[in-house]
Image 1 (cartoon, rainbow, N blue to C red):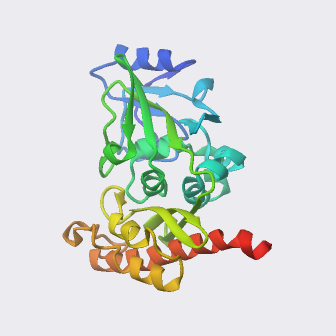
Image 2 (spheres, rainbow, N blue to C red):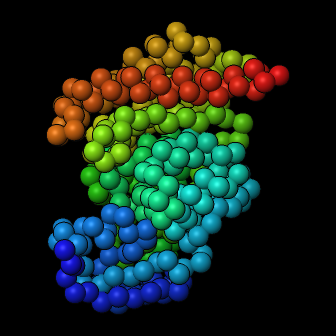
Amino acid sequence: MFPDEFDYYEADSVDEAVELLDEHAGEEVELLAGGHSLLPAMKTGLSSPDVLVDLGGVDELHGVRTDGDVLSVGAMTAYSDFLDADESWEHAPALAAATREVGDAQVRNRGTVGGNLAHADPASDLPGAALASDATVVVQGTDGERKIPAEEFFYGMYATDLAPGELLTRVEVPSAAGSVGAYAKKASPSSGYAMVGVAALLDVDGGTVESASVAANGVLDHGVRLDSVADALDGETLDEDTIGRAASRATDDIDEAMTMDDLQASGEFRAHLLEVYTERALTTAMEEASAPAAAD
């Protein structure tokens, strides 16, 4: 299959990309990042943009760096480059753990962190981890830059707070150095996407949970925090009993009538999977937290 005709531009900077978006306002414009979602959609006719703006050559959108107590990830940073950076694992362990589960090596070498979040596929792996990590999405348009908390960024299936004429430039994650992060998912046997995925970020001191943040993707049409699970962990000893009690509350923050119901799984089954994979993510986090002590 072949896409419809379109005009193609290569942006050399964020400012140029924004100018192109403004110049072609009123037309259907798509931004090309890794292309894993966009190009198949164009070939099948699900997407037929008038204009395609390639962001691959915008150097400022690539790379992982720390600025004080914030980890900054350029929107065009490939999954594999993000995983190769020691700073990612030190400061954003939950996001790194989820990124490790994206696709296969070929997908991780081409797909991008920013493209994943901007596409907002409810079955992708990063929205839950971005929520659990308290990430902030930074976007830029003709009116300048604005910062959007991850909790306010995702509206629904393929829908975000990105306005026409804006592009996602970077993701900022407050440093979670010293914390443990984990991600567990039930992958679709046909696509590898998450039927349900759960990300957990825990600060554990002496076996006691000082703070916890847990979130999921694949359950609703957007990522969702599991605050009841986190509340059940705070101040508790991190052991199997605590994890079991916390995981049993995984659906407390979910309107089960709104859970996704499709050919992959019913809403009822997804609610069941949510408890199971919450327990698995927390168990992995517990093992990570105890690993240094075991090594000693």
